[in-house]
Image 1: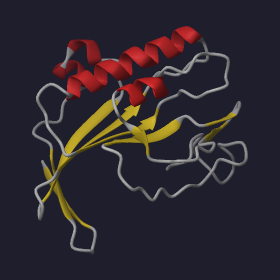
Image 2: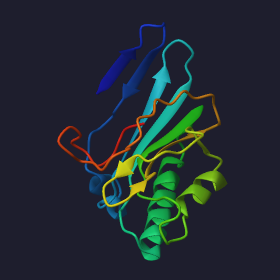
Image 3: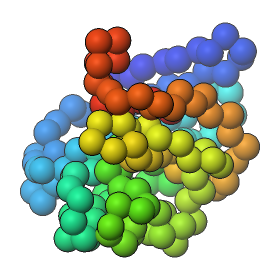
Image 4: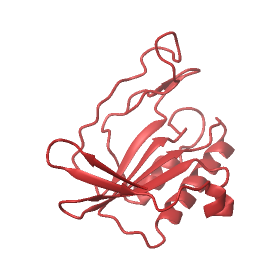
Length: 168
């Protein structure tokens, strides 16, 4: 499957999916992971951009954070086996934040792997049982970014917001 996107400013991207498969068919230990990866190629420049969307396991205990660190590390390794890109974006619901009673391991892992947070000033993207920053966009190498932010200022979901997370 090949998808082309033209943003109207002369930038045309193509995303090719050789196969659509369940994670368990690709790698047996991935069956409970929630990660989608695609490699985009800019048609004009030929630059390659890898985008990984993740949804790490939830939980408020240190053991849950340890699992998130392991799963994310394995997902990053799985991508790194031979695929080259000029830009690597990892985004999604990391279910990890600071100041909730456990040692945050996801952000230090991303810094160790040379990823920069595309949002300079974190804000609540989740607001159900607590207001927290669980959703991130990390990029490598560090690039100028222009995030569109819509903080979760009130508890969600509610009558007008159907999700418990706000997009970046």
